Length: 191
Image (cartoon, rainbow, N blue to C red; front, side, top):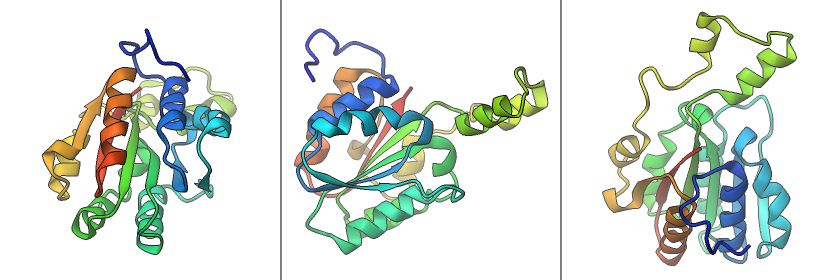
């Protein structure tokens, strides 16, 4: 997609999907546990370079990062991209340590909406249009907010490889760097 004039746009699931589809290297493996934030990539990936998709299996919260590490270990000649929801990433964040230790070519796009969005959707499906304060508190990740880049650095990723991304242009630039360098990268995509 043409991104001219949109570089300063705030990140959304749609333009995150466009940026990834544009930048994705040929023969990459995309591990998708982005759930509510990754649907746009699935729709826009038809125009991306040929790649393999490993999708969310359902009922397995936190499978994305370990699956990405496994894919990178099994296929060291292929770029791996983990499109990861922040809520489920908290379950298995230690996979970043393995990626750093082994120098794996894994680019993590952490879709940071500071919520367990899928749980909020399920509350709505259950007929709870306006959850009370306790239910709302159980479905947010902002009290206290998680410092994802500090966590990534704490698990061994070099500081210059862990960034909080807030605009489309910053994501495009970070993807270009991440796909040009070997080793793990962690991009917290503020949605």
